[in-house]
Length: 528
Ligand SMILES: Nc1ncnc2c1ncn2[C@@H]1O[C@H](COP(=O)(O)OP(=O)(O)OP(=O)(O)O)[C@@H](O)[C@H]1O
Ligand SMILES: [Mg+2]
Image (cartoon, rainbow, N blue to C red; front, side, top):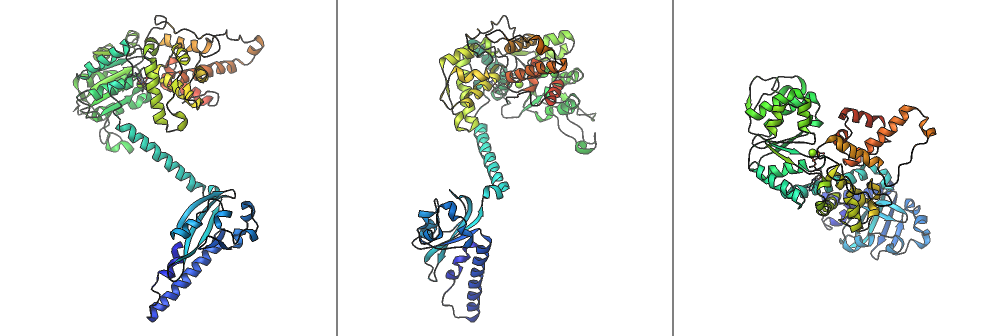
């Protein structure tokens, strides 16, 4: 539509046929009325000549003049670029190409503008007309501008994801570490990858069980087929059976009427990763055992068994032998899963890998963030000493979280101890605490972990201030809430915001943790 300003010149000038003359006239009128419509609906109009001089402005345009710092008499007659910063009117005159929609920003504000060349009958450019279609487009076109920003953000994220997906990220080699303990984990992982037997990955929260499960799958003969994961802790108990074994058609009404494949079926030919196996309800453990032993499943509401070919990798941070002893985990299932156990050491037992981990995690944080201030940073030696002195109950996930926070704290290229101060519990003034000896913090023991977590909260270098008797003379419920909130915040920090792991650290049920989070959403700081 806006090109209409040039339409008459594009017509055959000397066409003598009467109806062609009529058409020429209609088009001229159309061009003029379009010009009038634009003039009336635009906030302002300006016309410049071939020498970029302003020859005319509409009444609407005049109200922008004070903001541009000019009176009408010293505006009209000037070269447009001298009085309207950032204008492209001159470019339109010189190139003869319209700029149909553009945002112009200068001291007068941001404007949605349109600029069209003006041509004579011979088609030569004689000037340009510029329309200010909207002033303050950022407010009047808010939904459009916001949508654009959102789509751009999604596009960037999708590009990052594609780049990520193309990387061979799930190899055993992506389990970073070259100390003896890490090398032994990788050696075992490569061995079990060659077999089809169940694998049991044991280790505290954040030690890399999921990462290693992906690595084992990728190194196995099933690498070309799916790796299907079920996080048992995240699926409500009542839905787990359908999730595992599927639902037969017609077993239910509504959405499930057509039936649904379970994870065993989806993993056919590939690997099934049973994460948080310690959270498996007892009632389902027998069915799972049967599926593992017989490689057969029976969908809910069906009386037919289906054969599946699935390799199972299970993972847990629970002390399964203790659960067997307590009667909460079936011994037969434990023995079936425990054919090839791999124990992943906690970070505090492999501090020799700290530097390599910091390097790899830092690179990953920078690459995934897409933010300039998250560019890969190095860590100063004194900061490494501080990191090595931490108990790391959340292990590598916690290390990653701390690194991310420190990276965000500063634009500096080298992270010093002070940049970690806010993210680390043992970063106060005075000598840092030595790392807890391994013997004191029994690996795999949840109670030991909980103690470590508790120690993080009340083991600063100076003695904690004792509450004064007066401050204790308040409603008990209020004080209990404060202590609970502090413990939940500490556990979430330690686990990088992983609520399932935090609940486990605090030895409370997921449901109870969620209820407390819902109760006091503002007082509990979730860092991620
Ligand atoms: N050895 C390692 N090298 C590099 N990154 C690691 C390593 N171990 C863990 N990570 C990273 O730490 C984070 C936590 O790892 P992962 O999810 O595998 O832990 P997990 O043992 O499954 O924890 P949870 O028991 O809480 O589920 C992930 O971001 C993972 O990539
Ligand atoms: Mg995990």
